Length: 175
Image 1: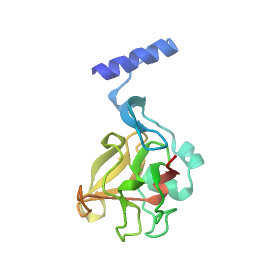
Image 2: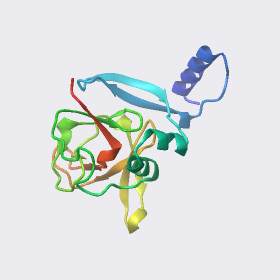
Image 3: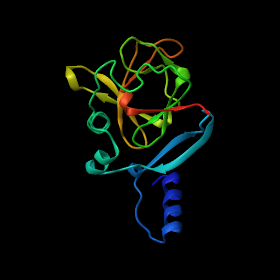
Image 4: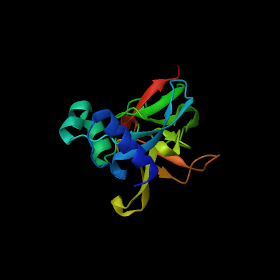
């Protein structure tokens, strides 16, 4: 058990009076952001885990399919896919800050595209070999919601295109 997990276990024990093992899979470090987009620092939090029934009750059918079963919305149909307002894009499942509108660009694909996440801590990238090709899938670090894919054909300064499903994102105007 690493030091962070040890402290998390101690904190849970102090709050609940119970001792139970906390695995590394139950903890995640994310960077929190204010409504203005300012970093509030790193924070160790528990993973959000819900049953399919709980997710279905909380999400639209399309958002459930995309975020929980790695679906994809049709291009040019997602809510706010062409939104150009200033603000933050948060996870539709857990409200973790994922992207800043200042890094959004028009990719012509019909999905919101960004050249970087708001924090590398808040997203996870994994190898995706579905559809007979190798891609990099992007998910929320806190709740494992599937968001979309990242490609190497984006603009400067990163050269990356985080091509996200609009239904997986909740836009919040900058305060």
